Image (cartoon, rainbow, N blue to C red; front, side):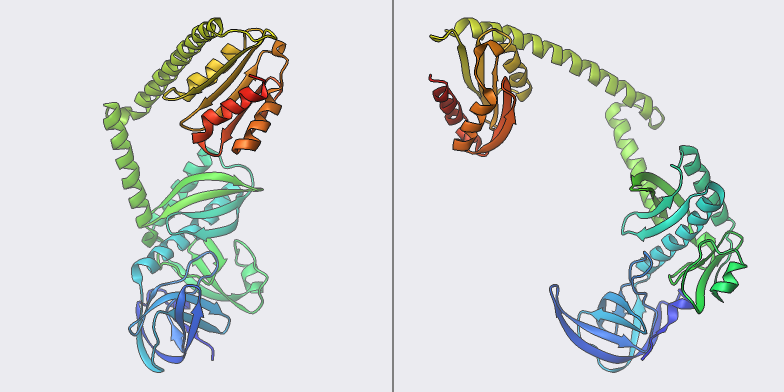
Amino acid sequence: MKTKRIYYDNAFVKKFDADVLTCTAQDGKAGKKWRVVLDRTALYPASGGQPDDRGRIGEASVVEVVDEGEEIAHLVDRPVSIGPVKSEVEWKRRFDHMQQHTGQHLLSAVLQKQFGLETESFHLGEEICTIDLRGAEPSAETMVAAERKANEIIFEDRPVKVLYATREELQGLGVRKEVDREGVLRVIEIEGADLQPCGGTHVARTGQIGMVQLRRYTKIRQDWRLEFLCGERVARAARADYETRRAVAEKLKCSLEEVGAALDKALAERDASFKSAKARGERLAELEAQKIVRETAAGPDGVRVVAKVFEGVEASFVVALAPAVVAHEKTVALFARRECGHVLFGQHPTAGKDMNALLKKVLAEVGGKGGGTKDFARGGLADPAKAQEAIEIARKELGL
């Protein structure tokens, strides 16, 4: 039997009476559910980028609403008796979806008519809504202007109407995007702004959207994915943005208005400090390398092998020390860090070894991944506790 869709003509119905036609148990991965079909429903099924509603049918909680063509299936958490039943829509969720969906229609119309950006798809998420736009990359000016225009129409509190017309009739009325479906189509009209076939739920006036806020856009294949918010979501985001800015201002010890300049100054100081520390670290590594090479005796072939497992030493220093050591002729460095299992094998070309081959042999025995060139190779041990063992195996391979 065909389910009457109450939300088609009145999206503001929160509670309704209906007859339960069928109630059948279904077992699934998420546990047992019951599929309920009503003769009429105000609960919206997922469709066109808009999520489905939640609510109650009698004492049962609705966990999913599915459009099955002629029938709307309601999946609930307990069985429902056949016959009359009182049902209701979880209104906070529904009205949020209405705000986001109508806001999307308005935003899509503004972006297309004024900036030539056509909406390819729409997604209404729990936190963020997105539309995928086809056209040139939106500029910062486009984002600001589109948001301002959409909000002007919202503040004018224009009527939002549900109409019914055929595809042929719509062609002469200025529909934003034509559809291929035949027969009588349900159409949403935002007075003087948009006309678009849609089966979703919408507010009655643009003022009920509250406000539109554009967030950011990213490149998605050939399109631009634009994130936006409407209604109460804008207020929540504005509050979160303010609290973040306030916390940053407190840490930077400045006013809210000075955050940008103070942050630029802090970043500049950080970068300068990092460069200075890096230069000092490299100089210290050079001095330490000279000392190590002086204190390391050369083997019968004239090659010095510096083998060491570091513990409690920063990784950046070890990384700087290895090339500083092998900058000396006929010198090989076999380094490992016990904390992370990082391994560095390097040589001066005059040493005549193969560090990549040596590392692969060691990792084959102790486990790990890595590689490099004949003169320098690096890797990571599967078990950092085997750092000393790895160095001893390398020394053995070199005949030490």
